[in-house]
Amino acid sequence: MGTTVEPQLTIQRIGQISVPVKDLVRASQFYSEVLGLRMWLEVPGMCFFDCGGIRLMLATAEDPEFDHRASILYYQVTDLDAMYATLVAHEVRILKAPHRIADMTAYELWMTFFRDSEDNVLALMCERPKT
Image (cartoon, rainbow, N blue to C red; front, side, top):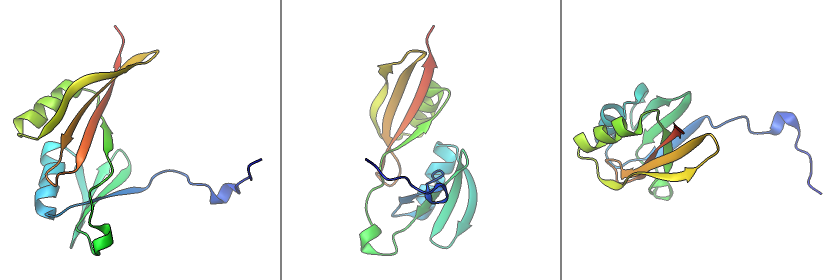
């Protein structure tokens, strides 16, 4: 039998995600100009973007233990084809073109995978209504 966690001690939501970068200026330009995220705050060594109410922090590693690639982040979009065209126009390194991942009950799940300016793997995902 599991133990019950006190309500005040449960995780509510993700508040911030950190993406380690080598070149903060280059990465900031990629995330704002290519991915279209709105910069929220910039301080020495870090910049923050608003990603649907979750802070996305780009930062250079302060210690060697934090100097690694990011986890794969899946950004949800409404128009995968338009976003893919934007990636191609900016000569982003595409790993996999848009393709159907799963046929769900009410929609089809589509994704594309690519690398950001810092060589992190990212994905765009789209829930396309069935026609």
